[in-house]
Length: 321
Image (cartoon, rainbow, N blue to C red; front, side, top):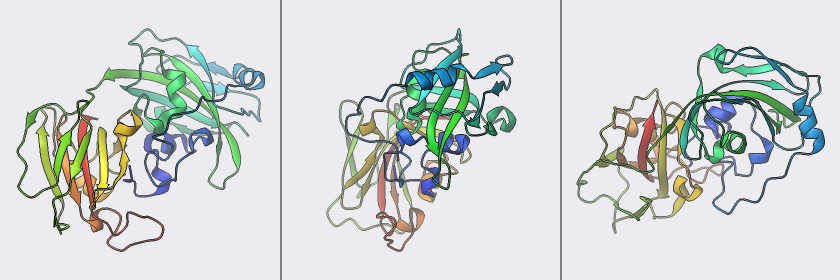
């Protein structure tokens, strides 16, 4: 989804909170929130070596669940591939892909053991959909665990200068809820002349741009399905299924094709998304036609193929928090 204000925000909650983006998931072009995503079949991930497992087994975690733990290890600590270890098993709901998961975590650089980020300190837990490719480094370690579990996750990464590093994280699952798979509510008749949206049996949208349709000067935010949830605030993190097209009808991104909705802060997306989704209700489906100046700028740019273009999105708002 080409929504972020910068490539550095491509995987918002995980990359921002963990400071570094896992190398194992960095297969995209860096221009989208799903920069680590691919619509092609995933290849089997490499397995941790005996040395990787031993390195993580040597990490000591002390402190009670619900509070920031003390994590200690002998530096430097390195792993060759993402490696995980369950520290404590939870007794809450079992996690499965597609669930909205909330975590607290603290992370450290394996090179010297310095702490980078702690959501216990910032009081800003991370929330995401399990299975979202932006959070792929957490999918396997957390799937099948239960709320209350504490899990160590280490992975090879790069710092901002491109130097190879290992990041060590202690993740505590604090909540998990099931969310709808598509917008649900009352159908709304759209205004005449807009792009026509049709849905397949799963709810995945397609769009037909009317012949002669001219790019609007102002943002179009047309509700197609009116959900009965709370109104979305511009400060919230939204979980949504979406597809985006250029005005010639060419699709450039779709969470549906990746098999999982995406979570993102409305403070970290293009202006057209922030303004178009604010005030909509959870459960709604919204057609957005976004002028270039509210997307990636009115002027074309060699750095972003979407700059200078009007964009069309269909967004199913599944949750907001």
